[in-house]
Image (cartoon, rainbow, N blue to C red):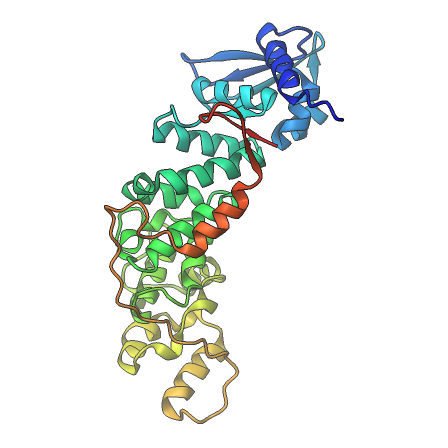
Length: 328
């Protein structure tokens, strides 16, 4: 017979947090005038958060107290997180979705892996409509950290069917490189290849200051800069799916950003389709007639996704309170 005292242990740690007994860490959270101090224990913080572990190892003590500053997290959000750190429980049902999303971002920043995973699955299962209504922000944030894998997949599955949500938005040029590349790699991106090229060029040019809109007026240094910026993007363009007319109109003005063999292979292929080339021929993107219903919370959630999320959810043990869960 075994004795399970996890619940009692959880309560003990909660009381330790609330009393601040024998604390040796002070965490300053927020920015003036909304700064709040939290007392913590290095052993618990070290074990529960990779962020704290990394910052505690070489921390300098003042009067035997370690001081840590978290200016980019609100006291309200951190209060939720530190309670989870100590008792392993969290209830999301009573929070507004914007708060849950901010909680996700902060949990990821503090490298609390299990909490980051759990919040993502909660949002995907219960708040997909909110994620779509706030899509530009959600998409941009989802690629700030590799821990947002499920959220990235959700976003990309929407974009490949309705690319205008990102490619035609005012926020497109602010995308980070990983986000753009993840889309360029998709075989099912519902855009013409020449338009994808245009958008990639637009994204790259936005990163060069004082650049003329006319490439005919560019210096060699301008082309070199753009080539460096688009170095990881260029291999994912399906050059042989672009018409000869658009090759001349759209690709040729920027041929200096391509490797010499790439431009040679493009021109060779159009002159003599049977001639050998060195450039891999990527498959054409699959065109589908798809409409995304943004009024439905489940229209974009495929059965494959649901199965995947359900498998991950097996790692979550629900306590007697149906609104509270323990991440083990």
